[in-house]
Every structure is written in structure tokens, then in C-alpha cells.
Length: 517
Image (tube, rainbow, N blue to C red; front, top):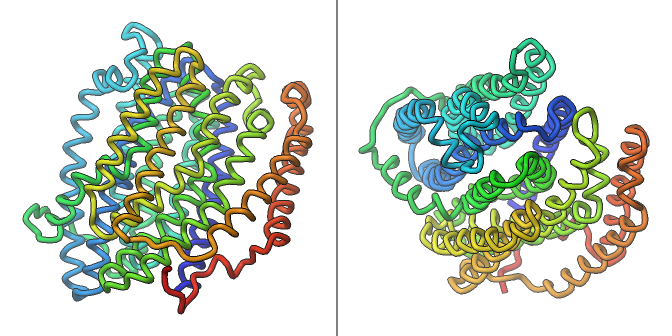
């Protein structure tokens, strides 16, 4: 089982890495074309609202409730029973999404006022955000159905398909930004059209693979289906527990809307760089382990359940901590090399650098939250993450209010990172208290090796990166070459330090016969 788990994780990482590379290309194109402008501030809101709801409902509470139930059906029911459950779930979810989409498009002006109250109703940002939201909101329905099909594919260990799907969003947005936007009276609207087109393309891409599993849904609305009722019952408390990070980021946007023009854009590009390691590794591990944990729970394999969590925590720390070091030390150079083109200026680099450095502190906690929360959802315990999520959300809001006056947009990023630490701490505490997780031996030695390796990495990057002003003033080719050299050398140095301190690849495998201690 351990080799299968690791293989699946690396497969998802590989597919997600491809998606993130295309995402960087997309961000480079949009930064060059639109910069940190009022127009891009408006698009950030119009894109963030359906994405927030997607992560909150589709990939958040829905997936965390649907996958454990589907895994149980897969293990204990016939294929026909599984198919009937999927049909009913698709029809019920689809009808709900259709109603939500119609309401969202109709009430777009009020939704923008709710999520970005700092955008004056007479200002350019507000009107652009409303116009674009009417195009991007239907993306919620399309991508939620895509998330449903992706959850089915993941449950049947077809991880690569769902992990590759986001590539299509990036391709659609790059294409419309380059070839559609120049022909529009308001060029930024091209990005909104790209989002809508991507929704249809992503859903269409996954359907043939469902047909191959003989699980292509035949829409059947049935709110009384036993499986559907279980999923809906589990979804309600999961709304807060699994999506606290997204709620916190949305609260960040709300506060940022009151700041100067460009603040929302600076936070957007900081968040995009933070999402690179988080999306590649944190999401990959949580995506892979949830079906495994759900099956262990269904078969009452308590030791394997605990060992899977232990493996995931160690793997996350091996990647999350160096990712935080790299983004904290290299925030300026990375922003300059990747985005300082066209309308994205050196001043924008310096401003976005502040928020990225603050976000870096929360990378490992954000990854850990995804793993720790999966431990509760696999056991269909939604109440514990809810209580913890509310505490984290209140902490984030209070910290935003306290830090925004002195640190502006960087204070918002710092508040989010601290809230993630609070969330992580409480999730771990209750997993241990409920004895869902019992750590294996060797954590002290493992932690010391991590500290030494990351200290060496930090020293190398600090010396090698130099002054951020040098990056801003040097030509694009110089910035890119130096960033590439530092990244490659850092990876080699870090892996070498891990090897010298005694960490080997086999340490990533869950011992087959070892029990939790």
C-alpha cells in the first residue's frame, strides 16, 4: 500500500507541476498586459468570488463529504448501486448549482459590494468587477461539476486526470489575454471570457474518462437518496472546517479593498506564488490520502490510518519548510524575475514582496491543515474542524483589523499566516487527543535534520540573492538566469543536506509492518 500511495502522490505532483508552470506563464502574461491597475483589481475580485465558492463548496465541503461516502459505496456496494448514487448526486448537485448560478448573475452588483465594500459604487473598479462577475459566475457551476467528476476519478485512483485539468484553465486564459483582449473595447474583459470558456473545456475533458469507468452520470434529481442525504448532512459542518483558509483569504480581500489601488493585485500575485508549493504538494497529498484514509476507516484499520497521517505530515514538512524559506528570502527576486515586465513595475515588486514574505510564514501550516483536516473528514467527523475553523477565522479577522493600519496589505498576509498556525495547532491537538493519530518514533531526529538542512539553505539563498534593487534594475534575461541558477542549486543543496544528515528516500515510505507508537 505504501508504494502505491507514494506513486499516486508523485503522479499528482507531476500533473499539478505542469499546471502551475502554465499558471506562471498566465500570471506573467497578465502582469505584463495589465500590471497592478484598477482593471486587474476588478478582475481579481470577479475571479476570486466564484473560485472562493468553488473551493468552499465543490472542492471544499462537498469533496470532503462525498469522497468518504463514495469510498464506502465502492468498498461495500455493487457497481450498479454506486452508479445510482452518482446519478442522484450529480442531478441534485447540478440543480442546486443552476439555481445558485442564476441568482449569482442576477445579484452580481450586490455580491461585489459584499466582497469588496471598499470599491466605490461610482468607481471604475466596481463597475468592471460587476460586468466581469456576470461572465465568471457561471464558472462556479461548471467547475463544481468538474470537481464532482474529479472526485469520482480520484476515488478510483485516476489521480492524474483531475490533477491535469487545471492546465486547461491556464491555457484558456493565456489565449484570451493574448488574442481576444486586444480586440475588445475593455481589454480586461478577455480574461473573464477565458474563465467562462475554461469551465466548459475542463468539464468536457473529464467526461470520457468517466465513461471509461462506466460511471458517466445520467442526471437524476433525488434529494431523498440515502447516499445524497448522507453527503448533504456531512457537508453542512464541513463548510467551515475545510474552507477556513479560503474564508480567511476572502476576508483579506475585503480588508484590502479599502487600501490604495494596486493592493488587491499585490496580494493576488503574492498568493499565486504561495499557491505554487501549496497547490503542487499540499493539495496533492491531501487529494491522495483522503480516499486511502476513508478506506482504512471503513475497514477499521486503525494502525494504517495513523501511519498514513504520519507519513503525510513528514512529507509535507520536507517540502513545506524549504518552500517557506525560499519564498521568504527570495520574495523580491522571484517577483522581479517572473512578473516585472510591461506594466508591472519595480515599485509593484517591492510592494508585493512585503505580502509574499508574510504569506511565506503560513505555507507549512496551510499544507498541514489539509492533511490534518483529512484525518477528521475520513472518519466523517465534521464537527471538530468546524469548531477549530471558527476560532481560526475569528483570529484572522481580529488580526487583520489590528495589523492593517501599520502594515497595510502586508499586515493582511501576516494575519492569514498566523491564523493558519492557530488552525494547525488545534487540529493536531485534537487528532492526538482523540487518538486518531499516534506519532511514530523518530520525530526528534527527523526534526533536527530538517532544521540543519533548512538553515544551510537559508544561508545560501541569503548570500546568493543579494540586494533586491539589483534584481529590479538588471535586464529580464539576467534576472531569469540568476533565479534559475539559485533555484536549481538550492534544490541540489537541500537534497544533499538531507542525505548527509541521514534522510533517505525510503523514509518517505510507510513501513509495512510497523505499528503506531
